[in-house]
Length: 219
Image (cartoon, rainbow, N blue to C red; front, side):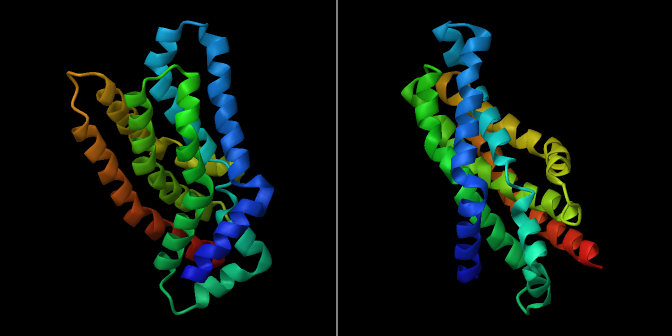
C-alpha cells in the first residue's frame, strides 16, 4: 500500500504539472473575481470564503480523469484488480495519494489567496481548516466518477459533470462553517462537524462505488 501511495503521488506530480496546474488554476479563479465585482474591499472580504471554496472545488476537479486512466493505459489496472488486496483498500490509497498531490497544495495556497480577497486572519484560518477537512471528500467522490469514465478515451468532462452535483453538500457546509467563524451569532462547530461527517461518509461510499464501477468496466 505504501509503494502504491508513493507511486501515485509521483505520477500525479509528473502528469501535466500536477499540483502546480491546480494551484495556478486556483490563483486564476480567485484573481479574476476583483475585476468582476469591483474594488470594494468590504465586499471582497464578505464573499472571500465562498470564492476560495468554489475555486478550490473547481481546481480539485482537474486531473480526476487520470486517476485510473493511466493505470488502464499501461495495464497496471488489471494487476490491481487481480491482486489479493481488496480493491476497495487499493482505491482508498489511490484517493489519498490524489489528495496529497492535488488537493493538499490548494489547502496550503488558500491563506495567500485569502489575502487577495482582503479576508481577516480568522476567516483565512477557517477557510484553510474547512478545506483541510472537506477536500478529501472531493477525492473520494471523484474516484467514483473517474471509475465510471475509465473506459472512455476522453472522459474528463464527463467526470466533472458526474461528480459536481455530489460535491454541493460539501461546498455548502464548508462555506457555512467558514462564514460562521467570522460571524459571532453563528456557531462554527455544527457545520464543521457536518463537513467532517460528509468526508467520512464519502470515504466509505466513494471507494465502494469506484470498485463496483471498475469491475463493471473491466467486465
